[in-house]
Amino acid sequence: MKNRFARLNRSLYIRVCLTTILAVAVSALLGFLVSNVYYHASLKPYNDAKLTGIAYEIQRTAELRPGDADIYLASAAALGYELYVTDGAGEERFYGRDFRQRDLDEAAARKVLDGGEYHGVAAFPNRPFITGFFDNRLSNTVGVPLTIGGKPAALFLRPDVILQFGELRSFFAMIGLLTVAFSIAIFLIATRYLVKPITRMTAATQQIADGRYGIELPTRRQDEIGQLAGHFMTMSRSLSRAEQSRREFVANVSHEIQSPLTSIQGFAQELAAGRLPDEERVRYAGIIGEESRRLSALGRQLLLLSSLDRMEDGLVRSPLNLRAEIRRAAEVLDWQLDEKGIALKLAVPDRLLVLGEATLLDQVWINLLSNAVKHIPEGRSISVAAEARDGWCEVRFADTGDGIPPEKLPLLFERFYRGDPARSGGGTGLGLAISRQIVQLHDGTISAESEPGQGSTFIVKLPRL
Ligand code: ADP
Image (tube, rainbow, N blue to C red; front, side):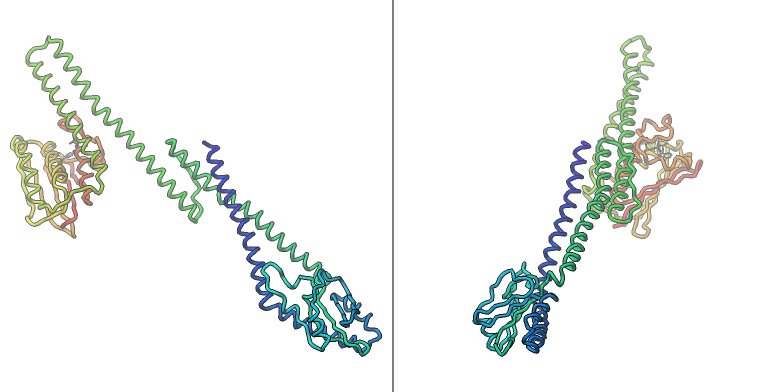
């Protein structure tokens, strides 16, 4: 596995390197093309005019002393020019470094012999990869007329670039090459640093996939990679929490199933032994029945919880009148209220509407009412009051029981939390957790307040329609 990641990263590294080298090569090519275009468009005519000026200068000086013309032309060539002199009748002389190609056409020579000028540098054809400046051919010269000893001749001239710019050329070539070499080397090193955090994150992903969440990534960087590392750590922590609560949930479920089953088995064995007095037998059968009911309630609630977990957007909402809804829930508990002699006071105004799924919200009202009934002594009272406040409907279920200690309040809505298992009347500890999930699915909140000894109040807030 490690190898695979090494290979992946290596390929990313190689990809970045190749891209860089390609970028340098393409930039060099584009640079060359653009400067060539610049030479053709702007430098070429300028160069031609400059050379024509120099040619006239040489012509003037050579004509001043026709006897020394030959020596003068040779020394002009030694200063950095390539010269060609012809009289059009077979007499030709070359001074300085030789032309790579002697390709001057006769018409050009004739024109200059007749007193005209030749502008081969300015007329050098535009070709993308050939810079006329360096093309050492006879046609790439300027020509001016020259009279030596009364005889007309033509003088053609171009710079000897090797003599004039030889070292400069290698100097610039060196700058160019070193720039390219250094930038590639620096890129190779920099890419390692760029790829490194990605390598670390890839390894971290693998760690998470293997179920190890204790990941530490450097998050000091402010850039996108730093942010990615930060989000990655947050994700890993929340995955770790989710995994933790999943494990706790499974452990709780197993425990909740195991303990009633153990007692059912124990009592069933006793019953099977058949040595019990009638009274005991009835009690044991009652316990078995009670535990089975609890198991079946647990099964139903677990199913409901898992369907709520998956629901998110799946609510079938319709406008609900809170008064009618809460009344209906109270009717379900009528029998229990009567049995404990508990008075229920409803103060829910008529026109309070919420948008929700009635069967789910019913569970909330019934759970809160039955909790109140369960946790208060006989003969006390429960009040349910609702009002509209800032776009919310607030419903308060207040009982007159013994209340809940403040340190327990935050735990009430946890799955499987039971304050006092002995007094929870066979509850599963899932009722409030389910209620909270349903209320949250309706974009509402649920909370509890309590004054020990004064009773508890559960407050449900739902967006008002
Ligand atoms: P259960 O189904 O076991 O009643 P709940 O989630 O509904 O589980 O309630 C969790 C715990 O919260 C109960 O075991 C109880 O200790 C406490 N509780 C809930 N409602 C009240 C109340 N009205 N008064 C006092 N304690 C309560």
